[in-house]
Image 1: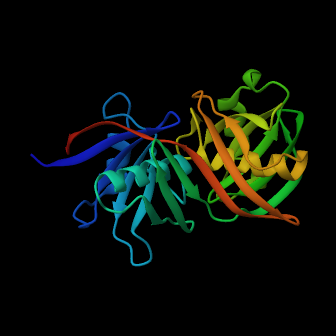
Image 2: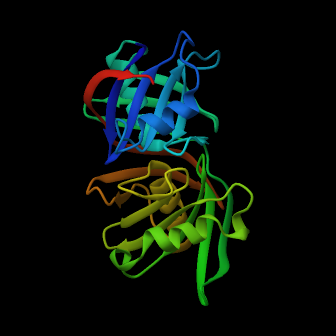
Length: 269
């Protein structure tokens, strides 16, 4: 009977199965993710985080969604990976992580982890979409993964799963598709954010790259200043820091918590 040691971790309600594959002995990762992340027949998680060797950074973090697709980057996942690496002595409290999107920095600050994100790119504002006969103004930015940001007056009233799915697969964002963030601006430089995640194909309790996208778009469109506080569906407030340089954004940081839930062995079958 073959087993794999794993650690279950969570950041802002986004949960992950983390495995150490530094020796590259574990194969079939995409199929493993689909089975292990199943909430009825597996361990249950939004995604599988795989720690692998890197020639460019302290380690490589691969993010495989629960549907078996591989994501370029995940802010909440990166915080979990950073905490895992520090606790397992794979890196010090400051480290560099290689992802498909870029090499990012991370620092473990007690119960908080601060990530140095890649610079946002491909920003497009005021994209007009018609969905089910209704017009929407959508903004787009890539914060490691693509995000469509929609401002709303009452985010709790949005059918995130249904509308998010239609935006995710809209022809305006083909061929890669996009995540969809629904954002309600609040007083005090605060945003309420709900996200439909590509790969999970549902709303999640939080999305790290999604709150970064929401904060950047709020700064570009509504004049929000750094740091922007983002209230996620999980109830945790994530902080996004940045420096605005003309029409672009630099020195973007995401700060929030992460924690280990339990460790165990998963039986392969």
